[in-house]
Length: 582
Image 1: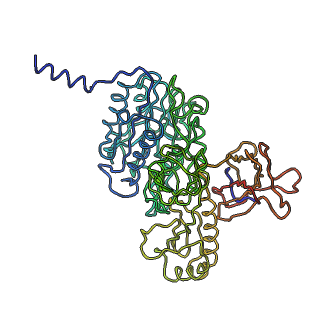
Image 2: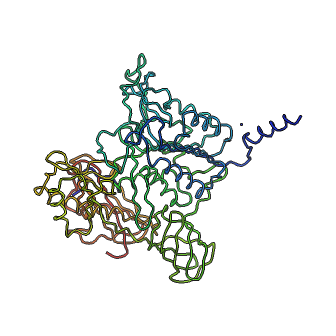
Image 3: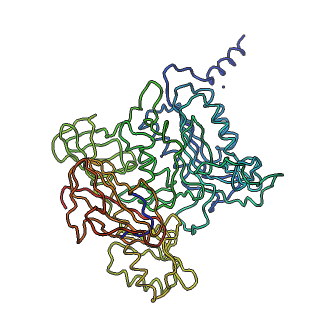
């Protein structure tokens, strides 16, 4: 049975000098359509401290990562990308970047990306177009703690976007305006909502009245869209968009980053040529669920721009993205690939060239991988495709620094024979995937993103067996969630019956799986409480063979049972694996 609501499974002599200066800063004319990007990442807020609701350690990293993938993978000219970071990203600078720099240079048919990583906020609405009487805003670096004067409302943002003279604008927003109340504080994550009490802001006359009929907001809360704009947003209106600490592993560099942007950038690096915005968005949404982040991203338009190839321009087709890596610096049986940890490549990954050369990654950096030839020979410039991946075997790290000595000792004793779970004691800032916190006479288990996964566990020796059981289940769930192939040799799709994306307690559920190749199917449920259940095959139906191109439904009509959604409510994940052997 399933556990909880299952959701299936990125302006004379002196005059001449003055004229030269003006010409040098004037917009450059271009004949063929091209690509532009205005990228903002605010981690250092002028009037706020380095605490939850203030500075954001990962926003600038997000901005640089977005710049790198647009330039390095999708052919954005470097001179066509403007990057605004931290205190440079004031309201005035953001307005000028869109209504000045972009508006004066972009031409019809060009592709434009506007990216924002930072805080969202709210101010009193005096126009009557918000259901809750509050207007959602973006928070520039100089936003004020006691005044809405420098906030950027969605109406203002739309007016700025309207000055860009193309119908091909993509807006990516990694922020949130609400939804932080159910999170716990950990050293490893922060919500991207400004730490400011809207009740303390000046309230203009007429503010806060109910919205006029038919004038609601879009699901993301911040309505930064129009018929000519595609919006990708990190979360729904009532959810927190979080940035988290990504610890790396296998030699990877640790970093803070927005959960949405981190998975978006990874998918943009890996996307095959011709992939659409909707294709990538769907993969990002699934990745967030697999990693159990409690936020649902939003895409504004699934019919026109959303179905267009990534970053395409009028008359130019899709950007020249490639799905393989280039082999460089080949010497004997050693070489270098021009991609690495950023793409999810790790030591042990296997690549092959069209000529039949096979190589194994020995070490990886963010943008390069060192390989050793196993079979065949290769030459500089050849393309190599990923054909195999060694999955991470990192254990689940559980922080117990905040526990009393009795509870910590009892837990460590219970987990002594559990190799998949490591107890982290001592430094509370040492990274942990899960943190156990004491609340009075009970304990709660908190994810590194701040979401409470388990609560009301008895403290001390009494609750240690139950807590250890939960953590062992979480360890298995992590292992399954980590099993991701960034470049599969064939595609497998998994969908909920009825094309739904969520379910309520007590409802029945079915799954539909399609594979491009023959193989043996395994369906695994990662429940909302950490329980892992192999749904299919099972004792009653040990065979689960699926043929290429067919859709296999589970439960089948021949099976004499139903799957029912059981408590606790929350977010679960079902994963489908198709293998050549059972």
